[in-house]
Image (cartoon, rainbow, N blue to C red; front, side, top):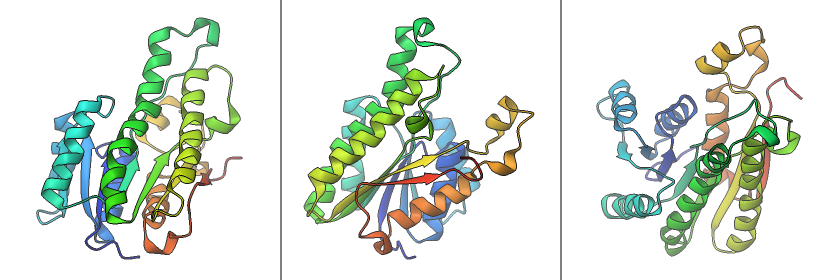
Amino acid sequence: MDLAEKVALVTGGGGHLGSAVVRRLLTAGAHVVACEHRQEKLDALVAELPDDAAISAIACDVTDEDEVAAMIRRIRDEQGGLYALLNIVGGFAGGSNIAETDLETWHRMFRLNLTSMFLCCKHALPPMLEAGGGRIVSISSKAAEDLPAGRAAYAVAKAGVLNLTECLSKELAGTGVACAAVLPSIIDTPETRKARPKADPSRWVTPGSIANVLAWLISEEAGAVNGSVLRLYGELT
């Protein structure tokens, strides 16, 4: 797959999944714009990459519309346009029943998982539509369909990612811009292993395998994919 000269924005690019996506897109030839709320995470990411890596790093709070709009303007000014948006930013909260969930947790899950996607899509779409093509891929979760007890705020927000993706697919039909959502199960990261010390991580899905799917989804080979939901569950069901 060849993403040469394609500009791809990866939100949450300094996290375990985001950094794997950044590296995969770089190997496919894309110019990657990595976005993170904290500058130090961007600095750490860039320091691990080759000096000639085709990467730009932008600190941005993707739950703040003014910051998102400014980031997209900067990408257009510096790169000439935007081909792909990968909504990786998200957050998790669980362990509380609905009667015990505080309002701030509810709002935080929606800001991180759904509002961030909405804002980035809203401001990334104009340059894509002007160019007559583009790709948007967003990370949901297996919990969006399982809707497990004790994780309502997270699960409902991630279900919103699926609904927003379907709305986008209908609005974008015939424009050359396509979208999709990916539902990972448990992702194998150091934090997950620490939180689940007795679990078998070999059954989980890896950041690298998710990154491979995302790279394919924004490639020309996946041009017929619009509104699709891909379930990446590893060995879990």
